[in-house]
Length: 385
Image 1 (cartoon, rainbow, N blue to C red):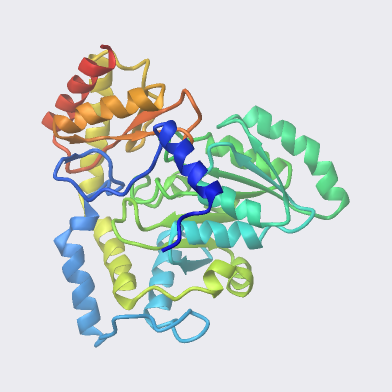
Image 2: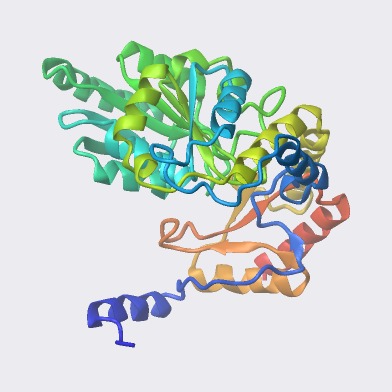
């Protein structure tokens, strides 16, 4: 096989020199403080059995989708599951994509048009930024969760957008994956209404966790009618795979016609759709959300008890981040925690800005209080050395 071109080799060398080279690791037997499986649904036998029984009961014996949804892959489970999503999330329509990345890239590469303006939080997920980069719209980032700066941008560009009959899109996440924090969504929605901007919310880390039944933060705040589009994913708290964009029927029709990551990809398998179907049934009946929030409260108290509060970003979600500056140092402390039996991952620059490197603790309904207490005590031992 031929070697990599020299420019690519140089980029790898630079990544190694910065101690930021990514590698693939097999799953460990350490105590889980790293996965997005907040409710333990990925290992839930009841969900597994219900998905199998649904397929068997409906005589669905098919391994693959056979093609894209616009060709041969739009099998009968799609309208069933999309109807469940519409009812559960109080949305006029739901369009299922193969992943959250596919959904964001498909939306942002096709919806904002030339002359439109996209204003996005500087910490928005890579899939949002990649999609924006593929569009013909002008895009400007605003400081993380800084709604005053956002309003200044809205004032600046609203006149321009109005003059050319274009649209302004405001994009953020309801729970940020690298900080675990949230914007003030009520004020944000009021700003968008005031300046006639289209609000787009990525709910990847909120769905399954927040809301009376795990509907997400937007519904928990009764803001679903104020949002132009919501992204919900099934690979985090829902423990399976795939994603959906919630919005109007017109938006769904538009994405079916112009969303390239939707049009040109093989559809999800019947088994994947059956699993999503089973997960939503389990979410309503499960007690795992209550256990998760008990653990979140216990973790936050443990941070205070170990005098670690100055290092942690404030969060009420399942994601809690301890700032440890420098790739070398954060990797060293992570390795010490892993040696003690805890799967805590370091988040390195350039994934986060330099000096904002961190240890990311993902909490779950199945973590014990003993595990939480011990991992924080261990952290305190090494972080203050």
